[in-house]
Length: 124
Image (cartoon, rainbow, N blue to C red; front, top):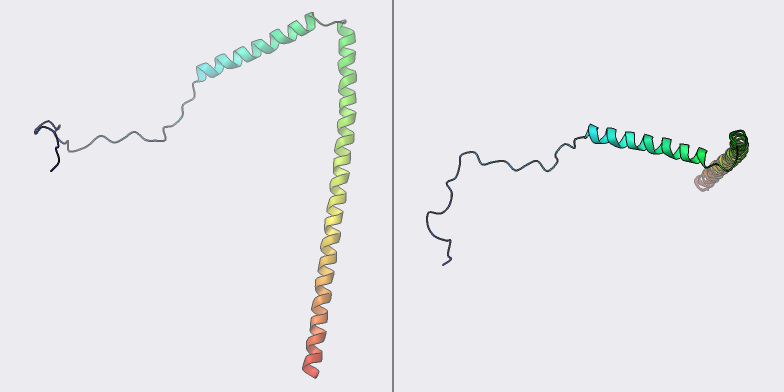
């Protein structure tokens, strides 16, 4: 026999027991916090750019010329790389199509040989 505790201490059962909370509650977006984060990010970018300009080792004209030179060089390099990548892709696709064409030709040749063998067997 087991002991269930003192008699009469259980709460009465209600007709409608409370439902457990949904395990998947809808996430809510705190727009105020998001706005504060965005403002802080923008302020940080502005302050960083200002400090960079103030502590630059050369004049503004020289800095702009260096930035322009760097951008042109990077653009040329990117153009060469992308051109090379497209040519590589083109070569890869041509190789794949040639391989597919060869496989189809071999398959057709095997079918043709199989038909010839079948005709020889039927004639014999």
